[in-house]
Image 1: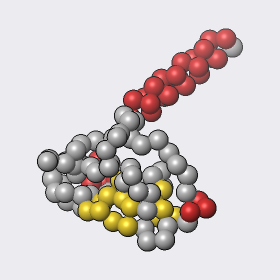
Image 2 (image 1 turned 90 degrees about the vertical axis):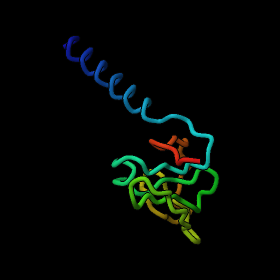
Image 3 (image 1 turned 180 degrees about the vertical axis):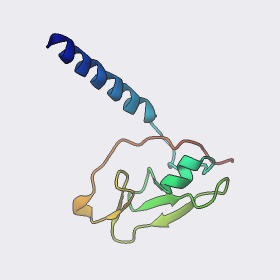
Image 4 (image 1 turned 90 degrees about the horizontal axis):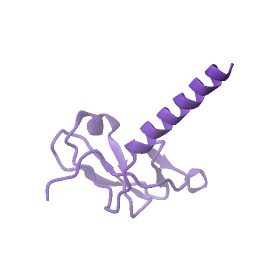
Length: 101
């Protein structure tokens, strides 16, 4: 039983470390470079300074398009505009790539 508990604990630590390594704090506006398939597949990325805006990657190696949620907020986990009552602040994470200057 102790071995099983130890294995479950180790698995939890491993999963936690993997998830934590995916989020690198970002102090930019959050614009992705749209240079990877993953960025295109995800499509939408939060704007780090304005919760009513978000970035959209539509084509590989082309600049992201800045979009607006109008009277709603962009939810970074749900990747869609939601009512303000459903919006929660989440830590800002860097996109996979950055746009060329």
